Image 1 (spheres, helix red, strand yellow):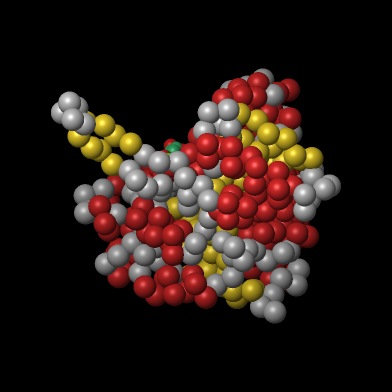
Image 2 (cartoon, helix red, strand yellow):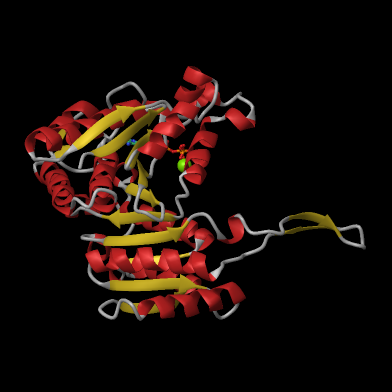
Length: 356
Ligand code: ATP
Ligand code: MG
């Protein structure tokens, strides 16, 4: 069965880094038996330029028909003056919503060669390899009622509502347990069950799902402690599962532990395993078009795409090993410390392809 992969280069460095992701996919297709068809469509500012909207209808239709989507980045100063509803970022929010991507996977990995880049001591982070599974379409960011109301006293009051239904908790929990099964088999569920009702239900449902995964070692942690533990001893974690807001905060914290924004991939998945894959970093307009961008976050996003949407773990590992090897050989893009030779975007992509 041929897998359909849609490439959405987007803006800024997006086209440069997605071009390198594409080469990796083409090399796997041509030399390693990966059966895939690649297509491309505009999104973000590029979508606005091509069709007057950040998520053109044709792009959405292609994304709906694809098995997986690889996205570069959207946005840039050229589009800052546009009305809010056609801003590039709207394209990204719209495609996530249209595709029903409820589960966000953000690994924080630190290749041993890059341990000096972290703000923490090398021995605390070297070899760090954790995965945060964040619920992406529920919780306080979307809960109703929300708003600003006037109290009888005349004072205004802002309010939001943290809501999670059992089915929402169950599907993110299942995604996290399945991810833990593929990794070291340890799952830590993060909540605030000592204070929040929604967290009490969260914990209950996660416990219920755990019965289907007896081989997974499940623990629970309050979010304040989890933040502390992430900075104190991050290597204790394998997979963390948590709600939308806690996940937003903890995943940025975990990303910074590695100190290498140009190295971090992400995945957003729907209920059938279809996903949108993208680097954690943005469109980096300051270095766009200069062959300076680090393509490895995008290439590692390709590895996630292979693993989570195509079920091609061996191809995924091949890509991850190739990335480790080019780092071991001393190649670095300008954003990475150490090494013995600074290379550009294209040369880094070529090097990874060469080690596949
Ligand atoms: P966004 O709002 O889209 O997330 P941002 O301004 O928060 O954008 P980035 O676009 O990620 O952040 O850029 C932050 C800094 O990191 C910039 O100086 C940028 O050049 C650098 N940077 C981001 N991605 C890369 C990359 N792949 N390679 C090298 N440097 C990068
Ligand atoms: Mg940002």
